[in-house]
Amino acid sequence: MKAYILINVRPGHIKEVLKLVRSLEVVVEAHMTFGPYDGIIKVEAEDLKQMGNLIAEDIQPIPGILETLTCIAPD
Image (cartoon, rainbow, N blue to C red):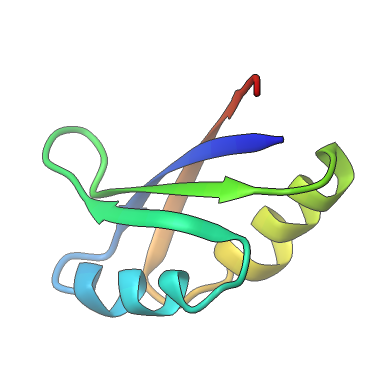
């Protein structure tokens, strides 16, 4: 299962946040964006439970991340 996670980041912290995000094993891609969100992360997980744990335990606690919006994409 894959998902795209849109993130809002504290001003001035996007580069640090993306560096930490990219170090996670399940992250396939991570990019800075322009518009209502500051970045987008593509992740892959085995199932919905693993996806939820990844978001709650690994991504949302990263210092500088203010908000996430997860979009699950069918394979």
